[in-house]
Image (cartoon, rainbow, N blue to C red; front, side, top):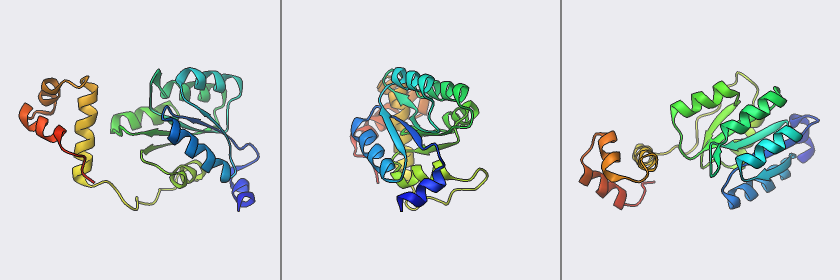
Length: 184
């Protein structure tokens, strides 16, 4: 099975996995290695830029938000060094604006977390122009709303009053939403 996947991958099977979530990064690297990639897993923008400058990989899976910056900086460096690289941007903070920015900079695809190794492999090996299949278990509307509220809350530095103002909702309503568990 690995040999068949290697044929789909091509001769250069180098893969950069850039994510600051260490357990996720390790699991994804092991899973991608089993699928025939030669993975290098890094956790910072600085390390990713240095790696892409020295040995630009054929494939990359880059987290959008890292502790020391944005993964889009690494995508730019990789595109400059290796224009034919296939780059997937992963994020837990999915938004249309960031997806457009990622694709404009040169990302091949954009996936929301949680994405598993099958999602990543399918995105990396997809033929340009093919539409991806619809997700098997998409987030519910309540979960999408909750994720959006959490994202705005984080962007407002966890300031409840500012978040409520930007979301055009009452502060106490927002406090009740934030106090509850996330919907499924």
